[in-house]
Image (cartoon, rainbow, N blue to C red; front, side, top):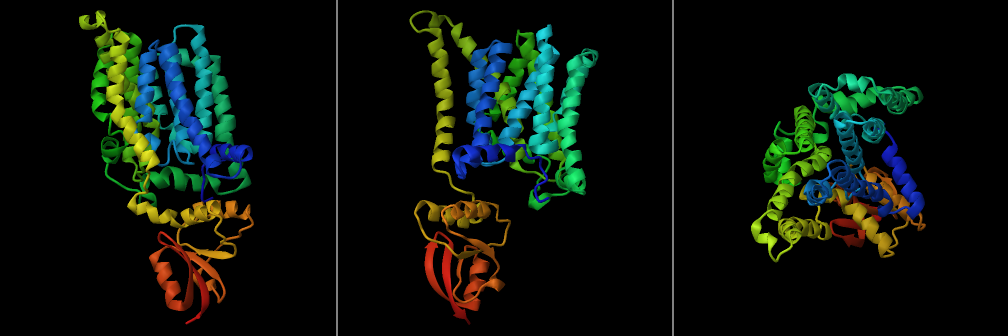
Length: 429
């Protein structure tokens, strides 16, 4: 029960391994596909419901130039948060369409809401439910509670959620007694009441992170977009602004009150923030089109396109630069030294068959490359310093482990790679 999260993301990765083989692409592909479809969701919502395709494109551009969304643990790595963000974004937008809908067609979006909500829970458990209080508050504010409970899709959706979402937890508890307690301790109260794995911070942790790193190119547009949204002539835009602000505020307050604070917990906020900020740039483009100077000679749409290019060129180029010249942070670089060496061995045909890896932390990445190496008939095992004997070949990267090995054995250096050392043990000292 080291990982108590539901299995949807793992199933998706397993399917991708079946399609493209056991490699980094297969592990990262679900997150990348989810990021793509999150962009599609924003486009479809803005174009088909809001009838503002320009807002859709601007929102997508803001989203894909938000460093916190593109970098580690979200769109470009094999983690849960990109898929989680797809489902939370989908159910939030679907619920808004249902609540604001004035015809029978909007009823189907209530069912879509429950499908996305169920998938959210099957992806990452309770984190995806943090938006629900905001949705409930908006329903009461808009006086749509009776409209909601009168829909047959509401009851079918609850049945679906209970059977698949809640049902998974009940079934897992039945198969592995103690699972529900592990979820409570690890994902709910344990993380909320205590700082897990040293991931702590002040109440302002997420505000500071979004301003300094995660949403650093666009945060200053947020109040402008909110203001434009509140005074917009389109009632749908005004309602959407209030709805998204309510979702953002409640989510970030709930996360900020938790003792465990991790930067990628902000991932579901980025599409919502992108829409709010997009409202301001969308308004600027509309203002430019109406200027007298653009009615003669220059096509109005060209002015808008030029503005978009000038605004986005620096954030986009910064994202490209960071992606293609990515460097691990100092605090985490050591974590990946041995996996990087194993990857080097795979790509450059370095024979490390029969070596033993000594590593003090949870070796998830090492286990992945261990499996990949076994496909090439190179078998690497995890071991302890106390289990080493003369004739063994050993891989280590941590200074304290290397020092211990060097103090206890006479060694022959076989290879080195960054901070990784590969020794053959000659004899004990």
